[in-house]
Length: 181
Image 1 (cartoon, rainbow, N blue to C red):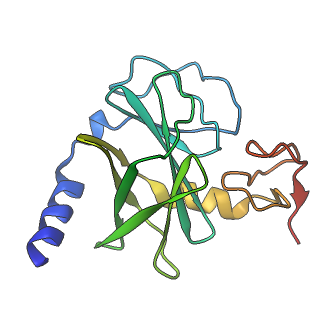
Image 2: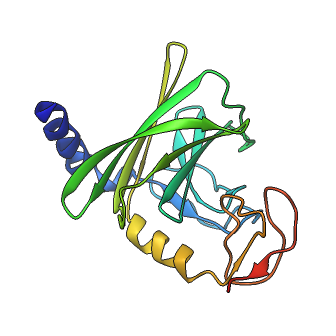
């Protein structure tokens, strides 16, 4: 187990940042005008998170309220069903690496609880379906988490990815966002 944590920490630190291509987007926003290093196209984030290319797929990560929600998206950034999908997240925070199991939730997402008070800086998401493994790395998460906490509006149904700094409608259920108390 100690060897696994050492390997995880090494991978988190050794992966070149120049290949990291992630984008924070507003729910339902159209692709933006620039591409991150290593990307050949722009991304949209259907659930208001961060989207990262993972081979022929995209992975969207939403951090909110001590929880991480992961969506598998196809090449056209359409959400895929979570049937047969399992996953883990290796999360780095303050120099410590923690493994967070991701469990299926609803029809199209995986969720995992972050340790109490955690503000992750980096996460490596590994998803498995059958014999296929899909991995994506997310960096600079602390600034993304701070933006989500600063959001003044949310879905009354508390849908993942609904937090926003302005009024609008929930990207998941379509209900009008309400001001946080």
